[in-house]
Length: 113
Image (cartoon, rainbow, N blue to C red):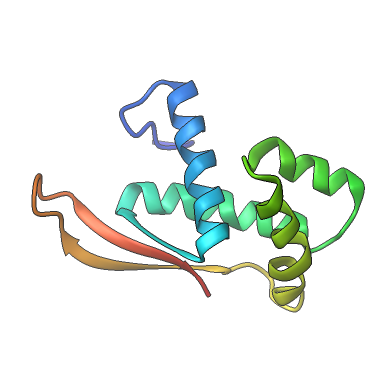
């Protein structure tokens, strides 16, 4: 199936969840979630980091449309972007950690490399 995963949510709910998770990942550097969510979050986080490598006003506005916290955007442009300036993609790592106890969903840890 081409395109994005629906994750069993409406478009607005899915977008809000992804925005929150990407913001939290960039803020903390590591989160634990299901494998399918981790793959979606990874895709969006990589896009945000790629945009932040070039520090322009237009790029800051692009990122601010998606990231929910202003201090995370500042951290992205001041620390994270320059850290990956010599790297062409592959800024996140997904590590599977086995099934969740309640419903058996495959869990993973996603972290910045």
